[in-house]
Amino acid sequence: PTTLVQPVSSKDFKQAAERPKNSCLSVDETEKELGVRFLTAEEGLREMKSQAESKGP
Image (tube, rainbow, N blue to C red):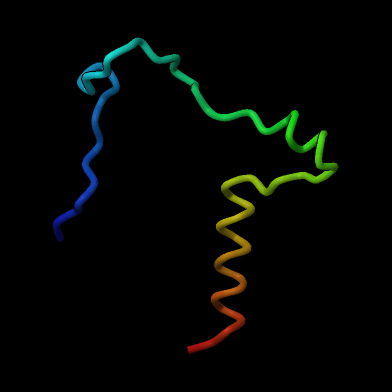
């Protein structure tokens, strides 16, 4: 089995500028402003799986 995605170390990935190790987007202010809580990636995937399974073949 061939995979299209191969792991690469960040030190081997040439970038124009230094990047922090954790550069994830914080949605805290947006959640506060809108009065909602966004799903985590894990929660979102679980929800997608649940919806796909409930639709059937």
